[in-house]
Structure formats: structure tokens, C-alpha cells
Amino acid sequence: MSTITVNNIEIEVTRKNIKNIHLSVHPPNGEVKISSPLHVNDNALTLFVLSKMEWLQNQIYKFKILDKIKETYYITGETHYLFGKPYLLNVIEIDKGSPKVEMRNKKYIDLYIKKESSKEKKEKIMKEWYREELKKEIPPLIEKWEEIIGEKVNDWGVKQMRTRWGSCNTKDKRIWINLELVKKPYHCLEYVIVHEIMHLVERGHGLFFQRLMDKFYPDWRTIKEQLNRI
Image (tube, rainbow, N blue to C red; front, side, top):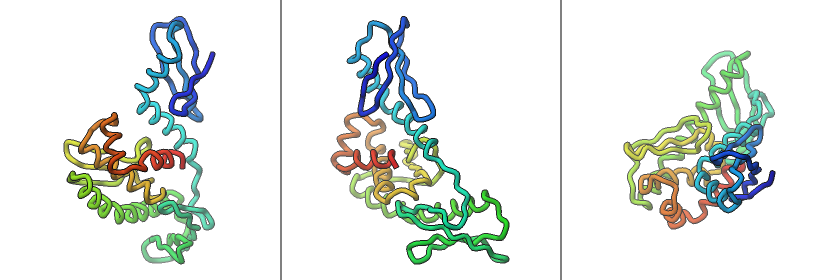
């Protein structure tokens, strides 16, 4: 047994009497392993991993997200984030009126909710508020980057996604933004929007796509790394 490192990913290599290379990602933390035929050297394995890099990074990301998920109870004193900034949650029980969320003094998120509401109900109200806050920020960013890149987005939406920060339907020119971006720094949202609009120019993530990103958004690699780390 040995290891190789590809793009800062450490991979455990086991050579066996088999015909094909098998690349796999394992819980709980996304450990990467390769089962390799006896005659395949490390350079060939590195090239194989590079050819699977997009898939591999997506698999690792899934495990990182699952590992980071912590139970949220929606009680007073919890820390919640809006565009990368921490706020203290303050739950205010009400006898009448509709549930709502308000920001206060740039420090607090006040959740007005009926007494004895379930955690699921509180989560639903918070997500609705988060969705509206995110939807306020998306149109000006799309408009800005449509003009810069020279492509037109026909439609966009927000939804919860487990394995992607965004997606693009190039045929319909529709982009989707992950709701969780509302909790990340603002420049992360901008990066994802640029990334998805760029797919209207180039569908894949190959060299041409990377050169386009370098041209229009030079810091994209740094932000991508930050986004997948936080």
C-alpha cells in the first residue's frame, strides 16, 4: 500500500491482481482510495485521477458538507449567518399575527413565531426569509455579468441543492442558485453566478472554460477553494 497526491488530494493506492483501475471515495470524511493493477505506475494513476477530477471533487464535497452539518434547533442564542456575517438568533413568541423574521441592529435576527411551534416550522420560516434575502441579490449580479460576458440569462431560480452551488441549463439558458449561498460571503454568490453564466459560452469545465474564467474573473480559483472549505 502507498499514497499519491493529486491537486492536494492524498490518495491511498492498493495494487492488486486486477484488470482495471477503481477510484472511490469513502465516509465519513471523504477519504480517497485507488485499487490499481500491479503494472500501473504512479504517473499513470495521476493521469487517471486528473481525468476524473471533477467527479472526484464533487464526491469529496458531498462528504465535507455532510460532515459539517450540525443540528440546528432555532433557539435564542444560536449563531446564524447571512452573506458570511454572524448574527445571534432571538426567538420571540407571539400570540397572534403571522410568523416573520427581521434583522435588528446589524447583530440580531429576530424570529417571531407562535408559541410551541415545532423546530420544523421555525426552520421553514427561516428558509423562506433566507430565500427572499438571496433573491434580492441575484438580479443585479446577473444583469452586471450578462453585460460583461455578453450572454443573456432567460430565467433563474433558487433551490436547495446538496452537491452543487449552482447549475445551468444551457438549452433554456436558465440558472439555479443553491439556497445555502445566502449564508456564504457575498463574493461567493457572485463567483457562482459568473460560473453558471459562463456555461452559456462553454458547457464543460475544460481548459477553454478555465481560460474564460481567468479572463473575466481572475480570482475564481481562490474563491472556489474558499467556498468549498467553509
